[in-house]
Image 1 (cartoon, rainbow, N blue to C red):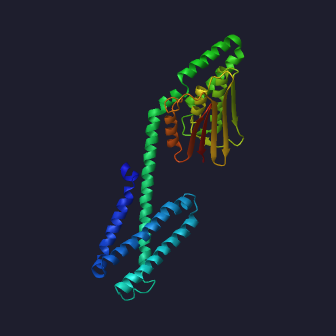
Image 2 (spheres, rainbow, N blue to C red):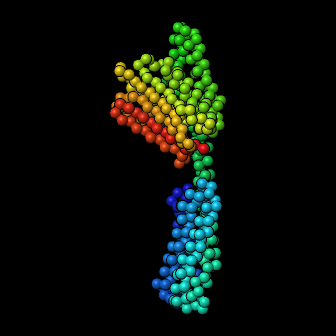
Amino acid sequence: MSRFWKYKLDHVVFWAATVAFHMFTRAEILRVAGPGEFFLEVLVRNGLLAAVIYTNLLILIPRFIRQKKFLGYAGLLVALLFAYALAKNVHDIHLYGEVLGRPGADHFFSNTFYNLSIVVFYVAFSIALQLSREWYDQRELIRKIEIEKLNTELAYLRSQINPHFLFNSINTIYFQIDKKNTDARDTLSTFSDMLRYQLYECNGQEVPIEKEIRYLENYIELQRLRKGENYQIEFRSTENVGGFTIAPLVLICFVENAFKHVSHHAQGNRIHVALDKDENRFRMTVFNTWDGKEKVNDENTGIGLKNVRRRLELLYPNRHLLEIRPSGNDFKVELTLRIS
């Protein structure tokens, strides 16, 4: 069934059945007027139907129904239906009036009601078929998300704070206890907040962006303690980043990768993280210096670009843009999400 929808076989079956039925009901034209007029009728009628159906499915519905402009959609659809009926009337005058010589068929509006009923039926049927397809795609997406969640929930939780980072954090706390207990308590409190957020506040599908930002700040603060003075670490979030929700733990992987792959030059190393929001678009930019020698692929970048891309595809289908641009001694990641 998935291949049936994937390769648009529903359209093939629909048009094969439509054209075959039409040819069957117009067999008289073939006998009386010959193959030329017969195939002209098949071409004109089904060509006009296809124009109406795909104008509705590909233009009117995306631009009006999905934008909730119902009045505009209704007006344009009615105009489209009447345009089909009038265009088919022109051909009917030629076919039934001039070629077949049927009484009264040379009147322009003689077949208007019939042509309108035909186009209304096929447009309604095509909409029902499209809704069935979208329902199936939505069901498949939900099923994939559930499977992905069950298969990766534990693995992803473990990978977010990897054992290497845990041991480094514990060592940092250990050495601080011997020097200054206040710093040690603050570090431990920050680390505790991170674990609490991961274990208890990330169970839902989305979390407030403010909590996700706080989690990033805690992570960066702990990394700041581990790194020496040779690192310039900057985190910036504009004032308009707030008041919306986001999938939990979808941002941390890019920050984690920046710290993992930052270069270790004596002249200085930089990591800059910036968050911004413009209307319904949230943007995250992560920049770090690196040596440019390491090959970028899905296996050697933190939890893996493949895993990150897969999560974004499932969580933000057609609502995200991920750009990864390594160049020279710089490595830059830009993530854009279209939020509700």
